[in-house]
Image (cartoon, rainbow, N blue to C red):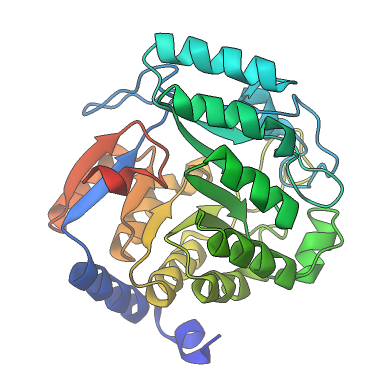
Amino acid sequence: MDEELLSMPLDELLSRAWELRKRNFPDVLHLSAPSLKRYISGRYSNTPSRFVSVSVTGGECALRCKHCGGRLLESMHQVSSPEELVRLGERLVKRGGKGVLVSGGADARGCVPLRRFAGAMRELRRMGLRVIVHSGIVGEEDVDALRRAGVEQVLLDVIGSEETAREVYHLKAEPEDYLRSMRLLREAGIRIAPHVVVGLHGGRVVGEYRALEMIAEAGAEAVVVVALSPMPGTAYEGVEPPAPEEVARVVGVARLLNPEAALSLGCARAPGDKLRIERLAVDAGVNTIAYPTEEAVEHAERRGLRPVFSELCCTLVHEDG
């Protein structure tokens, strides 16, 4: 990582990132509000079942990471067989659904077991639903299954520290495993939207910048930055989340390293810091914010950006214009 970026005053870093965004993208800020959770503001409200998340492992996860502990699976539609996934898709289509994020708990190698659902996901695509997946680490057989399934995009958290993988994810993995996963997906012609969790290691910034370097090396079409939001009932329940300024620096570096990628501030961020993080993310040149505050939208307008809401996942909304 260029030490200049890490030592540069934050105001200067954000200014450079903003100018790069202005050069490469239209003056539009996409605002994502999929029905993964309810969103109501003075400008927009989303519709239940329009874009949903699905766990193919129910509530099971072999890793039980410190920041999640399986809690994120609880809010998803849960299926245990390909047939159940197809039936869920049929119900969603009848309700006007647009798409699904297929995810689940990871196995011992850090991969969500999606292979046996390839045919079901292909059927969802045939129904007209948009299908993206959250995969974790993947090998060649996983990638081949996802290619056959016709998924539009693969989301995966990228960890840039072996220590973080071991202590937070309880996983024997190295940063290169994530780089290899991204390369395999790209070589198969599958679009990727890697995620970086700021403060993943107990609220500290450890491998985030290495993760951004690998993402740039892989040539991702979309990049998502989220911030640790300590969840009740997890090992990190009492952890101090990263400061908004730390999150903003990661977002700014993400923009500078990925000048033509669609950059999103994703769903997760601590409630107490939400507005400050969003305002700084606008200044750092994001294209999209998920579930924005009204104040952040007003800040974007003051900076000359036109807000456009969508019920698609934040990694897809920029495709709507």
